[in-house]
Length: 163
Image 1 (cartoon, one colour):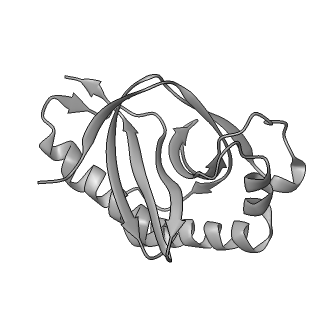
Image 2 (cartoon, helix red, strand yellow):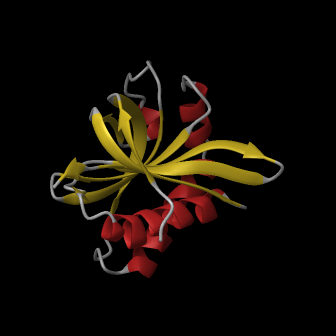
């Protein structure tokens, strides 16, 4: 049985830089490679540091969202400064609605390990086990909340509705 909680959350906004994922939605290897390439690029070219510099907290959001029939993937932060910055590339203000969220907490030795773990549990187990809720779309995010002694801690947030 998956370890998850249902939590009521206020609406919140994430400012992100993104990329379109072009692999078929069932091509997990392709999607994971595209995501890894994106994170390597934004980490190396300074865009992730630029995002962190305007953040209101230390959280880093790894957001997935369907936008205009495209599968989008974002690196994001909570911020009050959402002016487009051309050097960041494709940016978006991502609205997470007020409501109930399926929340899976976890840890990993890398950000990638943390994200894969909480995403896998959330979509691969928790949503299947929770018979009284459903994910009906909208942005979902893995959130890196802190790092202690070389271990990353965070959670997966998926907006859900009652069936």
